Length: 452
Image 1: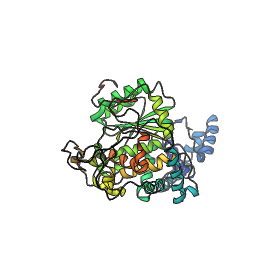
Image 2 (image 1 turned 135 degrees about the vertical axis):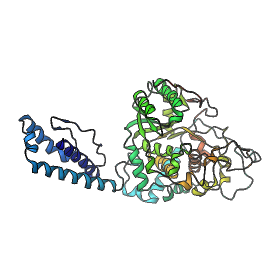
Image 3 (image 1 turned 30 degrees about the vertical axis):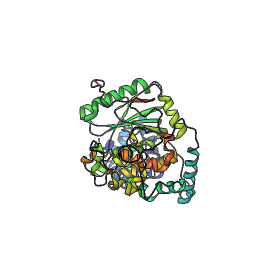
Image 4 (image 1 turned 90 degrees about the horizontal axis):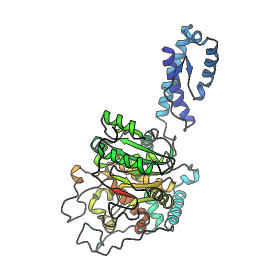
């Protein structure tokens, strides 16, 4: 027993040490000792493993450690030291284990601000030249009805028509993840299996029945049609019984959100601050794209076309022309964080954040997903003085900022700021109603016994 504990400690320690040298080292699995045979992949244990296997054949393994008390004590002391020192070094070393800005390595040149801005501006220009079947929404109404998109009579500042200026704003340090943010996202990504396409959602006990209906849709529509995909379900508060049934039946990876590592407002699940963080973590493990969906999303057999469209254009967002404008459901503090005037966004519809596809490219990650995740981690951005009362958007529509849509508000600002009046190019076709070309949105559908 003592020998088993010492070897497991040594294995764990060498794992953390090897992560400092080789960032892609896989985490240690549950190590089994079969007749003192060590199952280990870490380089520092190869010699030990080989010696132990050789000695095992001649029956010397037990005598090698157990008949020499001093040898066993020395081994345990070294194991403990390796475990403690290497873990502390790993924990306090800035994250570099995952490439946050896609699989493309960031060179010294790209790290230079002007070079990065130039590269991203060129990418934006090319994306806006890509053909799309979508047409712009022609907004002609004045703002007497403040709920709908409208043209303000006066506005002190408009969205910049310079692509380079818009890119520079979104790449500013204020919207860039710091080392602590990256540690958090890397921790979550570590729990997610790598694949070409990753579907993701989050759920809690209050949406358990709706989640079962959503998973049924995935199993019957998506799984038979999409190759090299995986499904990640973020546990935001399932009961132990619900978690057990989900893990048994969902054919997915169930992971837990680290609430202890984030600000307290993350625990208010309706604020959806967890969503951009989850999507960013999934993007670190996706080779092609990430598809996020709420529990209300039900797929149609056009799913492959949807993924192809996202791959061609870089992203797909739900931006129906019948949606309200952005400022009416976004607090002014969020606009202030981005340095924007609310009136400049009155003629743009708000996006729905319940269904999106994001392609794994440096552009999408750096200009959309990273600012979105950073905003989620900043209370003055995603939740500027907000309370649960700000969730009520059914008040009389006589002025802007009557409520707040949190993740939806932020994604609407970012994508509108990035693409300006050409944001429509990246809208999902036929997304004006809940029954679209690719999905049906049904917030009341349940399958309470699907996981039984």
